[in-house]
Amino acid sequence: MRMLFVAGGTSGVIFSIIPLAQAARNAGHEVFMAGPDNMMPTITSAGIPGIAVTSRDMLETLFDDAGNRRRIPTDLHERYIFNGRQFGRYASWCLEGLLPLVDRWRPDVVVGGALAFAAPVVARYAGVPYVKHAVDMGEPRTIDLAAAAELAPDLKRLGLHEMPWSDLFVDICPPSLRESDAPSAQLMRYVPYATKGSIEPWMYTKGDRARLLVSAGNRVTPDYFDVLGGLVNKVSRLAVELLVMAPESAAGKLGPLPDNVKVGWVPLDVVAPTCDVVMSHAGGTTVLGNMHYGVPQVLVPYLPYALGFTRRLCDYGAAKMVSPEEDSPENIAQACEEVLETPSYRQRARDIAAEMAGLPTPAQALPAVERLVA
Image 1: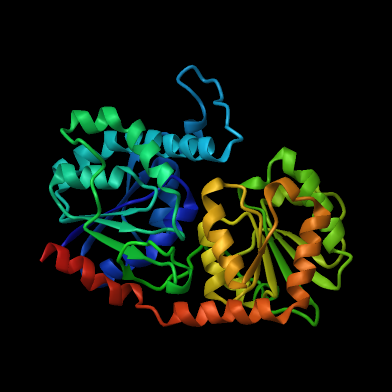
Image 2: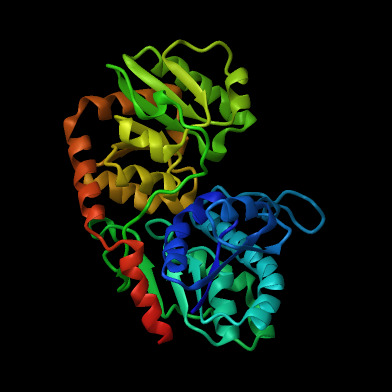
């Protein structure tokens, strides 16, 4: 069977769908993964044949045709529409390479991430089943509708009157955290994946102090260094070991660091099992990775579509949220200290990890995809 995986425009969403693609290859199927040119090293390093379908990247969706940066709305509903338009715009660029690809290669099934809106379109164009593969724990429906509106010219050109529905939904969200009205799905265990590098002993061992990991994600920008620097200053006074996932260049900009602070490349799938709490921007793969290892979290959902699953994880008792409007170093440090000192956060995080471990592996979920084609 020929399986075409359509990846999103960032490494995080690609990490989420790699385990199922690898399971398909291990089962003897032909697998291609399509994505932007700048993500090809991420795809091919996982042993998956990569096909570049656009030379443009997700950041370009923030600019109009004249090169002017688009204004990002502050209203939450308008922000959902803005983000949906972004993803729709990116999907349209991917279709330029995807359509000739399926004409030549003729896949039997197309698998796409929850925000990879080119996947259902190209599957319907090719006349093959479409499998939606969730990359986090659900996005507002408004995003889907806005993406469809942005793709309207492409849909009309291809003779489609609406965005195609999925023939199968592979959901990696544990049942306890699924939305109450979530559609039926083939559940699958989330398998953490990250870019590999040389592993050092401190990454998989820790000392007597509690270990706090800060995943700054895309927030390591000039306007965030004050917050990050203040957080390092506040948290370093606690009796903890502080690790900050950030580009190596960030360490120099943060100035001299205390002995209990490390800043730089940190392999989450290696370090997470040693952590007592992780603070992050609530990116889907970061949140799911720490859930997999039973690590309690402090979440600052900078991206609007992360707000829903952040609240559900907090309501479950495995995380604490700090709103983006209140992300001062003092508030974040206080939240981290609360999670460290309250055993129930750790217990609830372990409960989620146990539930995830009981879900079907990618190899066990794969037959549901195979039956679509059979």
